[in-house]
Length: 213
Length: 191
Image (tube, rainbow over all chains, first blue to last red; front, side, top):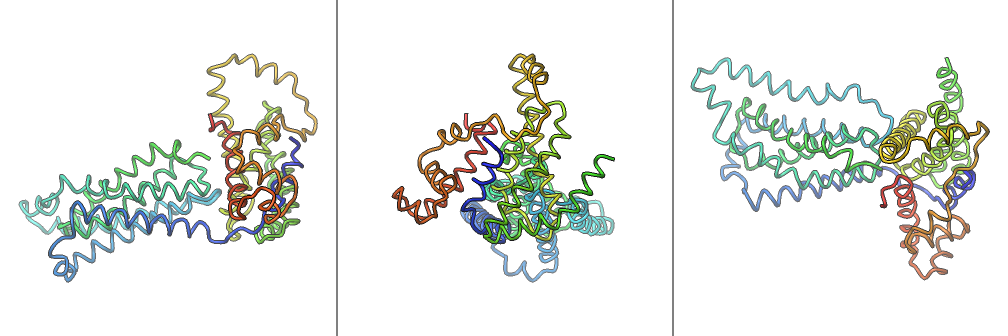
């Protein structure tokens, strides 16, 4: 095959390309993924029964702010890793900022608490199920985000897989936090993060196989 | 030094190439054709330097990169330097090729490559070893026919639809999926 012939073949009838396909794909993926996670949560766990009362507490909104800003940061990471040739230099900072914020808050809270309180603040009542439930709820989001990435062009497959895992973990966590009874920053800053890192590790391992094009 | 020259040359044509691509993405076929034409020369220079030991692979990889850039052209954002986007795709395809070869060399006699190296001519290789006709034969009809009539025959979507009895959207989908399938066949995913 001559390269000129291939060029002609590709250009003939190429037509216009729909703009904003990256954003649209991610909107679809996150919409369906979050819906899947919400259904899973509703079927298996249900929202916390004192949700209305909890929503009046500032700690509830601190938790929501952490989870939401981390989800936004991981969405940025996934978006940038879905397109070739974009700089990733500031991504660690964007991802690290919400984590640093919750860790500083957790440290301040733990420093002021006494020994017995510290244990309660860190372990809560649900430390042994929280990370696994987050990983479970992130599964439908992970499938959807990998679908979105497969229609785009990630060139660093391990990192892209990790970003897909992180994003699905963050969206799964947003859904999970509607159920979760825990509000203490030391709990959130460790067990939530651990839950999000499970799909991240899976994405890192599976990225090269799932995302190759 | 060589790399600086290369970068300079690309910077000089970056604007023009970018304009052509943006026009092409908007549906201007002539501009898109010119973009691909110029792009293939850039890719050839870029890859030849990086595949100095495998000159026989250069043109194959130019074509694979062209196909990849075409199939993934919706991931280009006009606010982004075009050269970085193109180079990232070409490098990705280059690394993919080297991995493929490494895996194959584990299974086959490496002498093949030594012979290939010796016989490689350093002339302008405008023809790859791949045969488009043979590749197309491996596609299912709903993808092959739209590509043959629209892309090779130059028919419109409506004409292709009438000729094949497919719907117009099926024709468009067939071309789109067929070109992606071609890329998959080339990288050996179909087996």
